[in-house]
Length: 58
Image (cartoon, rainbow, N blue to C red; front, side):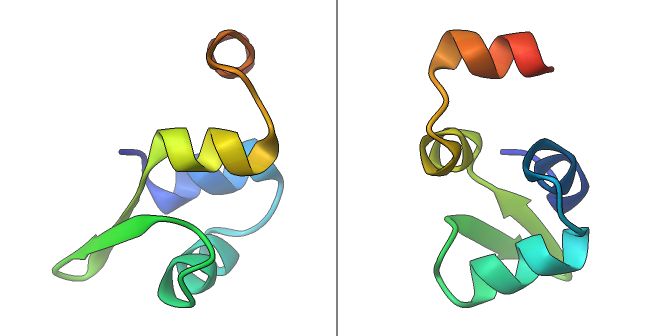
């Protein structure tokens, strides 16, 4: 799981947009209290990146 800030950095948008994607069910995420956590694998699949490419982008 990664934060909306990290997910936003990877896809080139704002953390707010990432949270909205999660709320709409367009991106797999879990809300724990007030904080969202994004499923890293789901994000990479959405971006069309392989595991090796994802590691290289970090």
